[in-house]
Image (cartoon, one colour):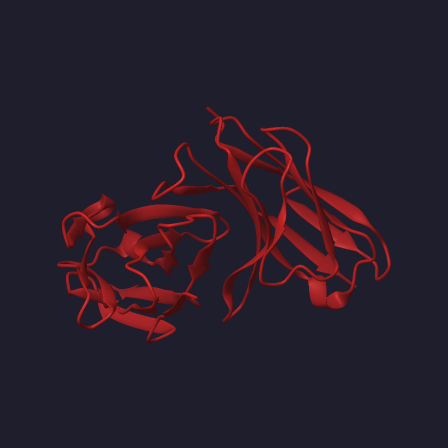
Length: 114
Length: 114
């Protein structure tokens, strides 16, 4: 079975500062990992995904994440926060052998302070 | 392409009433999903359909039924609504291949049960 833990339900950063959102996973097999963003009153949009190729994955809007097997982590980073980055971020995991079910973390709400 | 569409966007029900949430996708995806999103709990899978003609229970199926009407449409029915079903409901689709592909989300239905 898979599960995802997102540390910190709320994160605040100053505009221009580094964004770091944490995600740890539990999986009995090498997983596929995803980060989604949700803006207010909207559905989820894919930021990036890891599918067993390069461990450093680049996504949209300047975000990237690194898969670290030894730490079972897939943290999301962005070098310089922008006001438009304020949103809810979800980490998700799936089992590549079936691919049918995705397991989501509880989300991290990012606030960007001007 | 409209992507994933959901109707209605908002709904208020009284306890015991029934309703059907509609979802359609125009991306020729095989798999479709229904999630509910509650504060602090992330997204929880209610039901999914790996292909036309098949449906499977997810994490929280009690109180819900689904129908995969055809490849495009996947509906969620509440037979006797309860206040505990107040939530935001998201439909998603995934494809085209079995593994690693992205889930695409609809805009959500905000349901309140009084």
